[in-house]
Amino acid sequence: MKMRIIATGGTFDKYYDELRGELTFKDSHLPAILKQARITAPIVLEINQLIDSLHMQEVNRQHILASCRAAPETQIVVIHGTDTMALTARVLGEAQLAKTIVLTGAMVPYAVQGSDALFNLGFACAAAQLLSPGVYIAMNGQVFAWDKVRKNTQLGIFERISTEQID
Figure 1 (tube, rainbow, N blue to C red):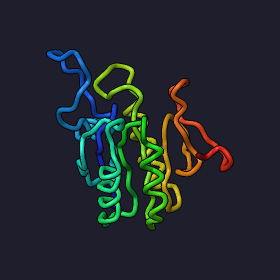
Figure 2: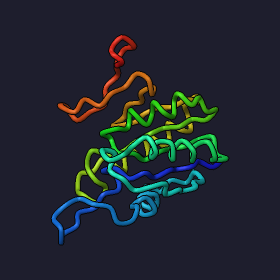
Figure 3: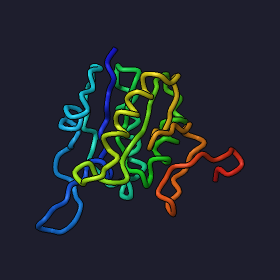
């Protein structure tokens, strides 16, 4: 069974532009990451968009949802920026697709030493193969249901929230 990886950008796919002195996008690092990770499960890679999640709007989220809907695969990993990952997970979760969709990203770009991108990708791919249909966020060794998670920006981690804490 094939798995689909949908790249949308985020810190995961940023690289350091020495001329501008900033993190930006060029091409996705995912082909190199998949080779380095030595994932043997059959994968279809889709570059959906390369955008910082802080700039992601509803139209971008709908584009991701359309890709998930159209995918013949039932196991999907979405590479997404961490700042608004929970918002996109909500859009995908509310769509109630009969697929297992796991969003992941990185706090440190793949191209920077000490990145969590490689681990998070492998973890998300494993989660997509093991979890029941639904939408999840998989970050730093933890899996969260789409409707029970938020990013704690002060600690730089994702954390589980109860139903009463949801805005």
